[in-house]
Length: 162
Image 1 (cartoon, rainbow, N blue to C red):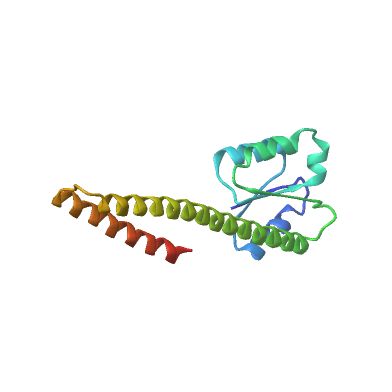
Image 2 (image 1 turned 90 degrees about the horizontal axis):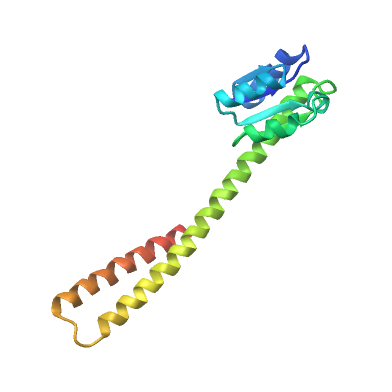
């Protein structure tokens, strides 16, 4: 859901244009108090706020951003832009947000994979060295051989995820 914060009379047209452009529901509020209440009560993917309203209320942008959680902010001059233009701006911002999330997920996955590969390699080397040491009982050698086998499978699976 997208939150639209605007005091203007064209708010329903803007909301409709945003909804057509994004296929997401739009909740419209006319002032900061209602916007903050909406942000407390539900989650939004984006907050589209009128820059003139934010400029007229000092500190309002900071208050808004503090309560947005994962929502992306889009500050636009709703008085000077047609609803269709606002819909296009929201669509572009939404695409950028989704791309950034995808890149962040890929980076996190890559980082975790690298860490796991390092740990698996260390485990494999330690197990193979222990397996080659003298004086192991037969059951201990079998258990270590299983650890080596399992670790090798993990290494193969991790190499497929990269």
